[in-house]
Length: 297
Image (tube, one colour):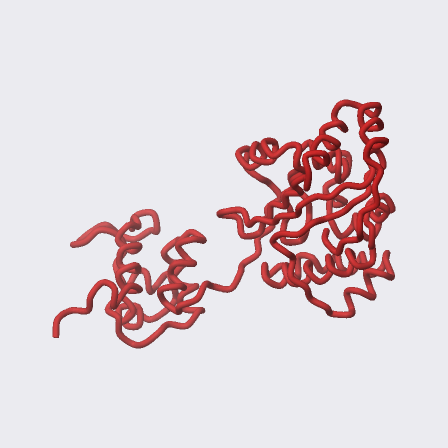
């Protein structure tokens, strides 16, 4: 029998590779009498607070599967990035690690440019706690002037339950609100953000009996990746928007939501909002229509 193949011991191969890329001096270890680059096995074990024998066995493909706690310690000892940590868990346990929610209310300039390029489709980026942290001009015209609100009020649940204008825009407010609460509950749990949103939930329960009742009903719903949303706008009347939600690559805590005009006419009416109230009014007079209710956001 020969040595295990690389694929047979993917975990050991990956650990050894990460270990040899670290600078011992950066961690306070002596550079004397080293025959190989990087950290020694016992030095990784020391940083991870596990036995050097157990760590050696892991690199050699012996001793069975490690626990999630051991892998977490090793990932910190090796200074792994989030994506490297995820890969470590996938090859070590066959599953990703539990989500570690970290609040970050900023987006890159590139993401902001993507939002701008989507005009006339309203588009926003929301966090796992459903705070809107970026938006484009069409979103300001159609969904609300987020820029005029303090950051803590740019929350979709706050707007749904506490803003009368947001309520009036929905054809079937109760159905929409109930669906939003159920989807919010699921996304918060998936992101590991329960403690982060607890103050928001407590506040909404206090300020909105309707939210309190829906929240304590413990219903869960999946946010649709695609759907059609029907809304009323005070300047251009009723229109239909195709709702699509996308994960943001490299930011598991963020979702990009795009509301694409369902028809060319709807797109033109949104554009007319940017041309002033008179143009929007003319569009509205030519386009009075009744639209069926929707459960979408």
